[in-house]
Length: 582
Image 1: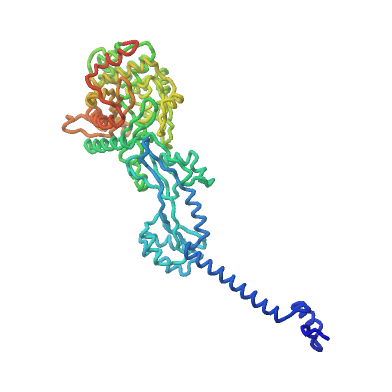
Image 2: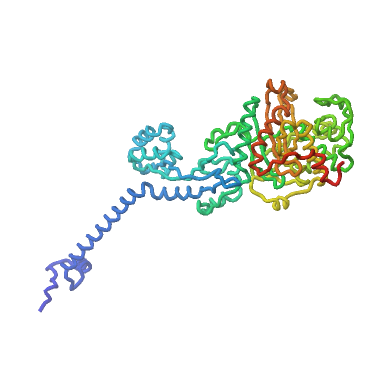
């Protein structure tokens, strides 16, 4: 009996059709069951396909357009995260925040002309030509505007343009604005440091961490600087007042720890707001303390006298001929207030005698003078964490005439910060300590320090600076209770190759307290003008010195210096502690 499931071949069916039917359906198979299985498989396949399509639609709706592009760009944004920068007390000076940025995917835009019209209408500051060029390209991802506001993001989102999306990026912000602008520096739109400590971070490993993908927010510790924001604010405030009062072209100043080399405050006016990078490109807003080089005037006399005292050939009572001008070739060196007599070393300093300083330097000789200044770091470019630095302007052929003028601060131009470094060495016991903008202990400072003068020479220099505040040119800065020492400097500026008497750079450097110095303050005013109260004078003692006094009265308490009253004069308090009083 035949099997009812088997259907005989059709009479006359070609063998080829029989073969195909056999391959498709097999033999001894229930064709109706197999048909039902095929229908079920087709249903499952269609359900799977539509599930994938539905899942993709849900993903686009919840995650947003251009998931792949967003993921790649987001990884780049994370890689540009930067550590916070804080002052020595933990106050935040620079930090990252998240800000939305607008991007487009030209390949996914349906109507590019409509998208361009809607975007430029919503963001009027967009350049229509630039947006058109980017969106008409065949790229998969283009930036349209970096760092838009949340309100702008909401307005564009409501437009519902396919192929237009947002990415939350790291944006650098500076809560203190102008306060520490030249120290902190700034970043570009990709959050990469381009100036100041921000650039130093990238040059010292941060850029490598970015490339390796390890520079994420949670892996970075704050960078602690040596600056004290409170002192910085007080210094800047007083410099702003002085710049306005004396109608100065510029004003600058810094505070350094003489024992560690730490820079506690640094201000250069006019400055800029790093939150507004366009201001930083103004050439008048350079950091005058590290990028500029200047003739420092009579502040250099401190180096000249220290050189003579450290040689052991002269003491504080050694006499120098200042009975008249010093004639050297066709040049004549004279004193602003000539005494017409012999001056001892103390009087050369307190009267700020150019003639006396010149004779002291000549007595040492050209090579000794040059060697001493090099030892004090005044002839070579000063390197710190700040990338912005300038090389000093030193005579190519250094002869006796150069030694004569450099003895009182003319004929050589240095960065003010390196002059401060040298003065620190004169008063801290004789150690030249490289300046730093990072926190440093005294032990760490000694490890990198070099002894450049004898301890007893440093003792005498502290005495001279205190004496100058008692009876010399620094009297207007002698704030009661703080026992300061100081040296003034007034340098005529060179214009068209000639010194101009009415255009000067005034400087005042102070140490406090003078018997055991902890800090040095430098104040500089560029082209201060004469006032009625200065009786027509524009020298340092009438502008930079009183400005320094105002700064000291504000910062000394912040620096933890307790006032002391009824102290004995410098010859008893300072020299009495020394083994020699000469």
